[in-house]
Structures are given as C-alpha cells and as structure tokens.
Length: 293
Image 1 (cartoon, rainbow, N blue to C red):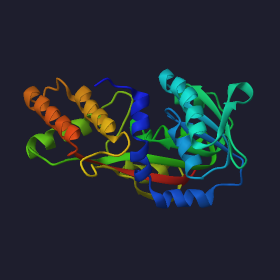
Image 2: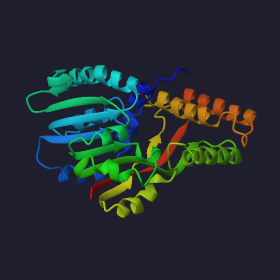
Image 3: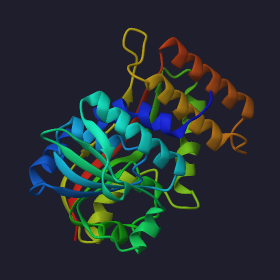
Image 4: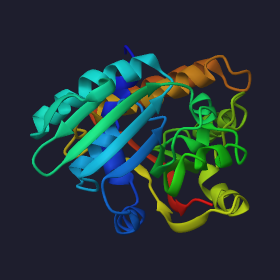
C-alpha cells in the first residue's frame, strides 16, 4: 500500500467525527465568546478540523490560523479546503495576505495556513486566540513542559482532543499472547520517542493540566471504534485501518523482542481481515475542554 499522510488524515475524518466527545463539544459550544472568533490550531494537518467546525455549525465567523510542520499537509490544505468548501455549498477564494476565505451569506472563515514547527510558532509570540485547538497532538509532545507554551496561544479556551490513553484492541484475536506482546511493544514505543510522547497521555493530563493552573471544564472519552457494516467499512475507513497497521509495521519491524515471522504473519492476517471486512479496531482516548491559566 502506498502511504499518503494527507490521505490518512482525510480517511480518519469519519472516525474522529464519531469519536469526539459530545459532552466536551456541547460545553465548548456554550462557552465560546461572541463571534468573530480567533482560533489557532496546532498540528492542524490538512484542515479537517476547520471544515468540521463549519459542518457542525460550531462557528460561523472566525479567523483561523492552522499551524503544521509538514509541507505536504499545508500544500494539500491549500487545495483541499477550497474544494471541500465549494462541494459543501460555500464560496472559496483568497482574502488579503494570501489567506483562504470560505463563506456564504451566514458564514465566513478566513484561514491562515502556516508551515511551522509549533514551538517555533509559539516563540514568535503570536496574538493569543479565543480558542486553541490541539487535535491528536498532546500525546506526541514532551509533557507537561509543553503546556505553558501552548496555553500562551489562547486568552480563554483550549480544546484538547483525541489524547491516547493506553488501550488498543484488534478483534477477533487469533493469538492472544502474540497480540499482547505486539500491543505492549507498540505502546512502549510511544513512551520512548526521542521527541516526547505518552501512551497514557489522557489520564495523565488531569494532573498535568491542574499543575499548570488550567481549569478543566469538561472531559470524556473519545474512542476510535472502527467496525464493518454488512462486510464493508464506511467512507475511507478501510484505508485508515491499513494505515494503522502500517504504523505498527514501521514501528516494530526488526524489534529484537518480537519474532519477525510471527509479526509478519500477524500483519498479513490483520490486513486480510481488513480486505474481507472483518477487523474491528478500538483505541481509547480522552478529550478535554479547559480554561487556560
């Protein structure tokens, strides 16, 4: 399978739509200040969260700064967001200073796409926003030392979503011992990334947020649950599952504590289950809405 990170981000839109905690979302909707809003999203990928906020009518007028360090994501977003907007019934074009403008009679979002490392972006001391979004980001960062800098980007709220919390499950299981070894090694790899990371980020954030003076307004599970319906996966979720298995392969291939033949067989059988529409995948995560200190 040829891997494309932008395509992976698009494929997981429907998975994230189901997963995002609806109590935290409702609390966010009620807590947002009057529009127009200023929003900063770090690790914003190709812009699926910005599109989601419009689809879900969470915002109608906003200035949205999307920050991502991957050039291919920013380039893809610059093309995909206008195409998505037109298909959704919005007008799309460029506003001042090269920003994208997505709008109709009731809605207007002006987007600035910034290719930058998030910590370099923070060091640039941008004007704080009404809302900071970090979607599927915090479990990849050194914590809790990253929080003060991130919170400097907001003068009010931070919506911290899809924070992995230590549970991965593939069903049906055909070798319980091998499965447990593979998942344990994969989780351990999250805890030992050179750039930071935590396989139990979700539960640890409760104390970490309190430690920097943030007030938790809402928190709840945001589990990925991917399963076939009548032997088929919805949307592009089969590709999403293939990507998840690819992440396992690239992370654990050649691991000294894993039998290479057994691992290769596990990957092949799991991929065959995806192709037949049989694999169920679950990952436990936690969302937070906080008032920044």
